Amino acid sequence: MTIALHRVIAADLRQRIRGGTIAVGEALPSEARLCEEFATSRGPVRQALATLREEGLIGVGQGKRAVVLDAVPAQPFETFLSFTRRAEITGHEPGQQLQEIALRRPEPAVAAALGIDLDEKVVQLLRLRLLDGRPAMLERMTYVEAVGRPLLDADLDAGSIYALLIDRGVDLHSARHTFDAVAADALDARLLEVPEGAPLLRERRLTTDSTGTPIEWSDDRYRPDIATVTVTNTRSTRTAAL
Amino acid sequence: MTIALHRVIAADLRQRIRGGTIAVGEALPSEARLCEEFATSRGPVRQALATLREEGLIGVGQGKRAVVLDAVPAQPFETFLSFTRRAEITGHEPGQQLQEIALRRPEPAVAAALGIDLDEKVVQLLRLRLLDGRPAMLERMTYVEAVGRPLLDADLDAGSIYALLIDRGVDLHSARHTFDAVAADALDARLLEVPEGAPLLRERRLTTDSTGTPIEWSDDRYRPDIATVTVTNTRSTRTAAL
DNA sequence: GACAAGCTCTTGTATCTACAAGTCATGGGT
DNA sequence: ACCCATGACTTGTAGATACAAGAGCTTGTC
Image 1 (cartoon, chains in turn brown, blue, yellow, cyan):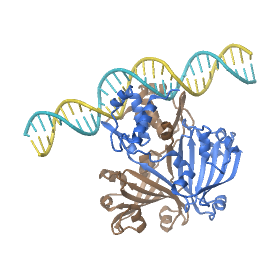
Image 2 (cartoon, protein in one colour):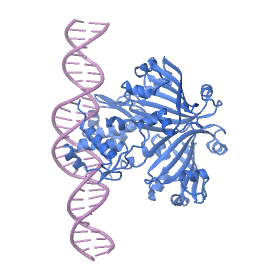
Image 3 (cartoon, chains in turn purple, brown, green, orange):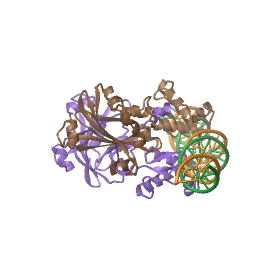
Image 4 (cartoon, rainbow over the protein chains, first blue to last red):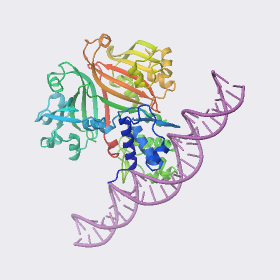
């Protein structure tokens, strides 16, 4: 399988930016220069630059060379879902420790979020996420039974849950993330290795399929000194409409 | 001034999607068809489709026509930016108290974020935001001088800063938001009326214009019992791109 | 009827060309 | 010393062409 040239170019430039070969604030080589370097035409070069721009890595402008904005790329949409992908992109080593998996009846608040009855069962997971071996995030995930069943038999310390679900044909479509801050409770404190009461970033997430049916409810708590969450948004929708 | 053809095509298709001429789930005309229709080559047509894909309006895939995903993009820019708009949507009464506005030299960290020299001046604002009369969020905003100047003369307890800036022709294009949690410092505690050390949701925001030049840096701290931040994202946008 | 091969339509990738439009540095005039 | 015009360089836009690769329908065979 050959990888498209514009992807190769984008990956190469990404590497240079992350590796510091091209520093933040510095200009990239001109398109013409890149064409020579990769022995290609402007098409693939421009496509690669467009990708980097979309990722928020570079800023462009007519008549002037592209400039490196930031060494850490903003997450494209789908990576918003995956802790593993996020870690890889930022160059950290992801890890995970499954603490508990259970099939049980949900608490009322969770049942309400998922829009199910109190007597329907759910699959709940408690999982600690690591970055470079340090505790970074604690997930409390709840899946509706039909979706969560296969998780009971899977090796959850190995791969990504999302990859597994998508593999089984689960139609993950959109997610609503609500952020706030909480004080670490006893369990948070023990697993994340922070004092009780320490501030944690909490992300509560409701994931739905393309028909809008809830699939997953999650309460994730981040150690703010190790992991943060970044979101990028653009105004282009409106501007272009004019 | 002529508008680039690919923008015209994008705007036209957007119109059809929003207007219902092409329903959600339905396929767009093929590229070849669009080429005929707009009497052009594939370049501009593909560029227009790439724009719509980036906006999350359509999903694409090799060998099959582009499909309308959603008539309304998940995250309109203004909604994300504007506390006022968010409050109105959720049915609360927004309020604000400007604590301080100053023209000064930035701290090194802020200067670095904005990509300016230490001896360039910036306009800094400290503003408390209220919901239904209760303190909800504390903003520490920093603008590059050229952009922030007009704010010195404006009535900031009245309208929205963003509305004012857009009015003055400032090209707000995209923003990167980083979320974490911090313990309230003395100033946070006093103004937000929480104990010192209480967990606060922190949103650090870098807003840039369409060339990627930073315009604004902000550190916003939310009282989690009064205000949270919600983001929605969709998966389908990107799947085809990998 | 079921299945598979093949054909056609479609998008993805790449090249070459051309001109428009913006940026920036150089250099000359005041 | 300052200012401005010029010109070189760079990116934005657009056309035409070619082939690769995936999707889905059609058709022919068993």
